[in-house]
Image (cartoon, rainbow, N blue to C red; front, top):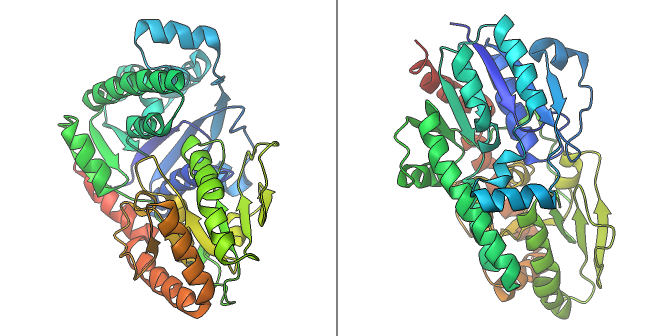
Length: 396
């Protein structure tokens, strides 16, 4: 049975500017490869602007993007602070996008609507007016857990209190959203368990990020001689993690290995980002695979967040030796010491990096084990097939 699927996205899946974009695109490609008809409608923003896709993708998905203004402003923040409604979510509810969605729904029939992230849930009331089939939320994270972690890591009292308010508002909305949808697709078993604890009584399925092994370059077999971090700096957990890596971890590495180099790359690096000894900032790079598949040791210094780190899967797929916090490898089922090095404190993180730099052949062997393990568990075709089997139980 070929399903007519509307995929509603909170940002354009293409170009693949970050892990969230790649995750949405992997689902689109998997559904199309399985013979289903997918229409993609996305919000585009100043952070994620519209870029015309290639002709084949456009023809296959009839992709459209509607610009919405998600910039934070004092008036909107104050209004939602007083009303108790989540400002994080409200910024993605646009009259323009709702208008275009209504036009599409009046002309076309869909068997299923796939909502990408919590930020598309505000459109459920409109969808219910036109769509008889199930509305399924694909949750990229447990969103309020990200803000909960950020609040806990913030020293400034006023900022911590404000983040706590945003977290509570977002948590209330997230719980309410679980009642508005027909089913939930979580990105990890850990997230699925949290949603169940929050009171989700809808069917829950787990579909992590998948990749096509044909897209992954052959691993760089040169001995690793530097350390790197790759991640979008407009995502607060990445920014805080890099700051911790550079300020708390890296001086300890340099004390043990004075010539060590740390390479930082990713979209939206602040122009005034401080560059210390042995630190080189590349900023945004043209190709993620080229950045990930380098003769370096990958770091995932994640201190807050939930879900599955897509860059961890991609780093493993390229055979990179990785040092990560436990949170950075959450939901992957990888074994510390076998597939990556796990470290929670600055001292332990620095010690793990130094050990891998001192024993580069062992680092490569660990990376090779990680590559084999991730190929076995995260091949996109198998993951989409499992997801479709779940979806078919929902469609009349």
